[in-house]
Length: 169
Image 1 (cartoon, one colour):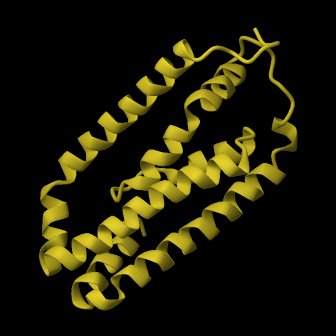
Image 2 (cartoon, one colour; image 1 turned 60 degrees about the vertical axis):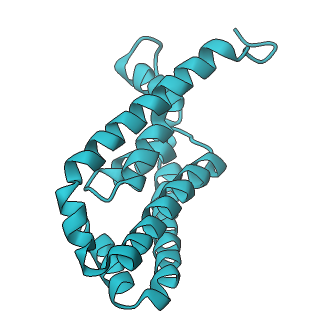
């Protein structure tokens, strides 16, 4: 069903611009509720994953990587209308102990940009919106990769330039 709700939002926005923003808001709320339920279920069912893995193992390296960059892997698929595996990263965020506040903040930012952007596109381009998206799918994909690279670069820069809190090494 990937992309069906995006297409519906664009179509409704194109046919009835007066309800575009309401529909975009409802899409944000629905997505947030569903993702929060999945995140919470993953977090509550993560008991056997809660203990720290042995240092140097693949599990330890993945946990470290996800703590550092994982929310980028939530933000990018949550933002892009092209099918990307968001559920896997929502589950990983829950299992690996991402704070609820961080998760909600990242997901909310991405979903607002995505759904209100689609509503705007429908209002502005009308029925040509889907043709526009199809014609520019490669541009959106490259844009997602560039955005991911920029976010990861920013995280690396921040880690290198922000002093560690006192008492950590």
